[in-house]
Length: 255
Image (tube, rainbow, N blue to C red; front, side, top):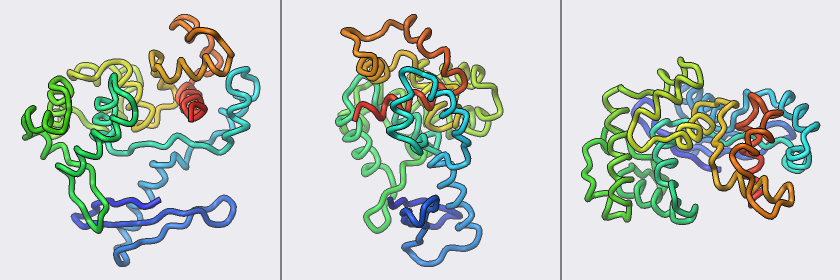
């Protein structure tokens, strides 16, 4: 995998690959960065791939769960792939609302190429300070709906002014963080839980109404219909505090 970051005002392009068993190799592709930049990349990768998470309790729970047992064995070692940047996580969640994944990727690519920075054919996600100044019409030109355009601009304004921040959310309880996010237009319970799962590293996050999650459980249990929300809550009781990982493994089973 290759990734471009901007650290201390300079682009840092790196490649991540597998090394010997249990190791990852990190190679810098645009010159040797400073020690501070190296440390920032290592910290980013650890968060990005959720490397500091002890999964032993999850696997112990999954081994006793009729839905997760086979998935935990099949995908053993899989970790939640996180989105460390809060603005990117929120934008991705909003873009993906009520459309298929392929078109969501198309919207994101257009958005990044229109408003992000590029370096050697790699792109940085747009900054909230820039997006906060856009108009709805500028996003509609990329085939955003008017509502999604409004939501993304408002989220950008909240982050640009400091009314919403990742650090502030991390200092709250999970319930309080969700409550804070849903105050913002365009962020409902599903989006808030998605961001808790993918950005904040909250293993108790549970996007209960997620269609993909329902379809995965239907397939795992061989049901003729998708489970109801009440049935979902019952099935998820054994997953307490590991709902995010259960969700991620179930999502993985769809592909």
